[in-house]
Length: 44
Image 1 (tube, rainbow, N blue to C red):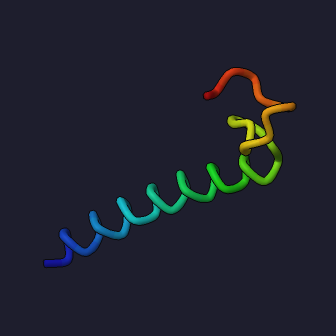
Image 2 (cartoon, helix red, strand yellow):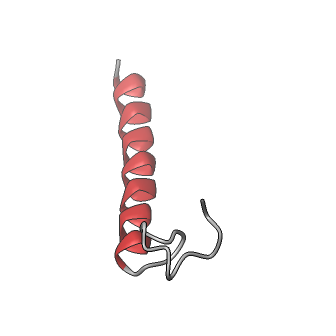
Image 3 (cartoon, rainbow, N blue to C red):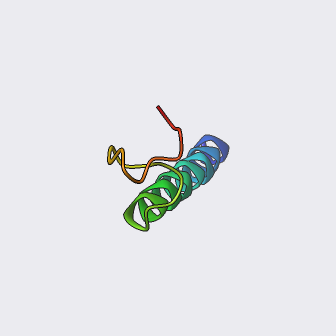
């Protein structure tokens, strides 16, 4: 039972870190054009 909880916590932390990184990059305007075609680098 403890092993399952530990593995679940590790997976949750990894997913949370990935989501946080994506949100941070989005706020900084990195990785996608954000729907503004004048700034788009061909993502559509």
